[in-house]
Length: 219
Image (cartoon, rainbow, N blue to C red; front, side, top):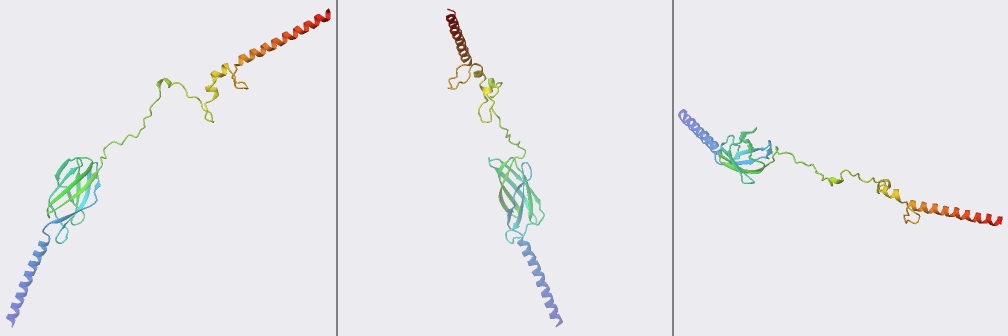
């Protein structure tokens, strides 16, 4: 009886050991095979530098890949310029998370392709960077100057009603003419001369009439 129990215990131990071995092999094999790459939001962190996180997982069980090997990143710009391959990955703050920091050759849009040898995986992302070192645009408005010959002539003064001041715009007319009641614009000196001539003629006529009366009375 004791011998039978010993054989059973030995058989149970063997089965347990085999189960552990097979289970360990199954877990080990679960972390093999291809992987998937998930890209995070890219952010410009320098004049021509972009940074973005990635997460690498195994396709067969979705577990995080705690290590990556044979990393290669290449890029193609909008004008066809290419760069790489480079290895931009640094470990992140969580299992399976990695941080990519890429220095681009120039500003604009770039198509980036990431290849990983272990676990075998690939992915692509489009990033956009601006040239932060470029000078700011000159928004100064250049005003064209007028005729150089007119630079010394002052502009006519404008009154509150919006018309040029008569004192500034009509000085020449005020020297030789004045406005009459009927708007003919007879020169002032002509009017004055006519008035004086009329007065002189009146005085002469008056003296002639007076002298005639005196002569008649004496005769």
